[in-house]
Image (cartoon, rainbow over all chains, first blue to last red; front, side, top):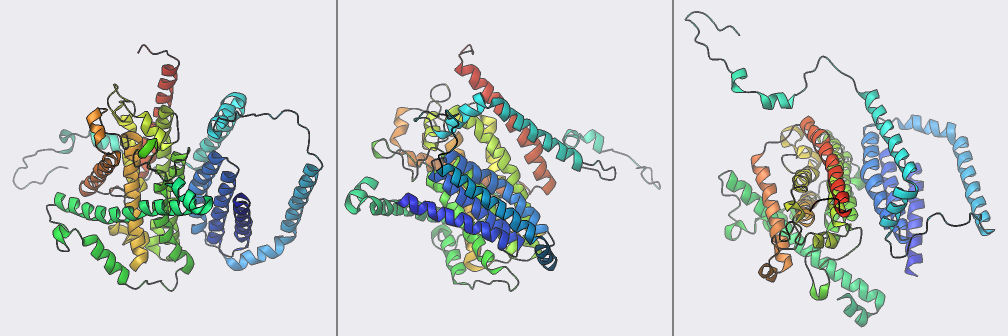
Amino acid sequence: MIQVFVFYLFAILVVASGVMTIGSRNPVHSVLWLILAFFNAAGLFLLIGAEFLAFLLVIVYVGAVAVLFLFVVMMLDVDFAELRAGIARYWPLGFGLAGILLAEIVLAVLAWNAGGLDTGRRPAEAAAEVSNIEALGQLLYTRYLFIFEAAGIVLLVAMVGAIVLTRRRRSDVRPQNVSSQVRRRPGEAIRNVQPPVGQGVEL
Amino acid sequence: MTAWFQSQLGTGFGWFVSNLILVLLIALPLMLAVAMIIYADRKIWAAMALRRGPNVVGPFGLLQSFADGLKVFLKETIIPSSANRGLFIIAPIITFTVALIAWAVIPFGPGPGGAMMVLADINVGLLYLLAVSSLGVYGIIIAGWASNSKYPFYSALRAAAQMVSYEVSIGFVLIPVILWAGSFNLSAIIAAQQGHVLGFLNGFGFNPLLFPLAVIFLISAMAETARAPFDLTEAESELVAGYQTEYSSMSFALFWLGEYGNVLLMCGMTAVLFWGGWLPPVDWAPLYYVPGIIWFFAKIFFFFFVFSWVKATVPRFRYDQLMRLGWKIFLPISLIWVFLVSGYLMLQRDGMLPW
């Protein structure tokens, strides 16, 4: 009983905040609604007993991705009138996409009701007493090891690429060199001189 | 306790009532602790600056925080006319709530009958803490943006970059601890520390392989809670008061309470993850006659003293130095340590080490 109630609560909140994400006029509000949607999705994950995925969703998406999103969106200088004009131009495309998605969902549900596809044995059968962190770990590091590593390499390449593209060496700045500052000794920094009267000091 | 309430009031309602009582049992003393820890902070800071600190309200100035609270409570809440009204009010509430909810998974000590003194003994407790501590940044970002003022906005941008950066190193520091304890559950992590080093020292921090991580964690915790020397979000010489510039009255006080609540939480996390939580520092039977909760509070207070000590003595970092420390020093070190510790554990558990 309570599960059904909580499920519908989270589900309605996900859908509502999804609608508000695309409906709200202010882009910052949109991101905040998106964060609320992530939260409720994490709640749904918890409800089906996937607590690891739920917390991963909160840590990765809410804690890092959405923060950077918000970071960028806050600094945007958005012209709202122009945005309105954009909506007028793009709504047929948008509604077309939405219609295709809806049709796909309906088809999937119909197919599911017709009995589903017989894919044979389930690929991953977790033992009942294993927590889902261990179950995920066992699968990721045995059966899906190469795919997992390949995903890691793709991300690494993307990261290196982003750094290479944005990094530039500037010759006109003098960055702080901490180790040389730490290594500096009084002998290099101070010079004792006895200037003769009437003459300055050669620097 | 839950069982007793459920037998009296029925399953659902009894569970609700007992958990409500437990929540209040954690939240109300926490508020009191925050008030007293603010007083302690000011006293420690004053002592290191050869001043006397708060000494007028009550004996030794003990009631200073309550006087401040009363004053703040009686002021008018001012909302700037150009602020984003809803978000402006929500922001301090988020900061405060996030600081409170994290305490749900902190084990305070062994309870009666083998149970733990913890509100929610969930098996992903550490992930919960990570998730909650990554939410803390939202209060600050939203406050900075909703104020519609330049200094709070700069502060919000700094806070976002700073907290995301140090979360990375905190995440990597936690991995060796999890590997060694073999669990995400905080009670299990504490239990794994009993007699961890040489059979009689309780705490991962006494292990030479994990001690550097304890230091990195403590420093990252200071950066994560934006305490001095990393308090660039409210650097008064640059940003007036940072994200709280436009706030007044209770909304300001909520930021204040949330900030110190987070500091206490980070001290508690240091104690739980590296220094044995509610275990005494040495695995020696007479020390166990002292209740575990006393050891835990003593450790929290010790680490809070370290926080105050650092605040009183270390000058503020520059922003590029902060980023350098986080990304170029802590991140590589903690990454290498993940390799080191996991390699060591692999060899040890396969019995390939000579000891």
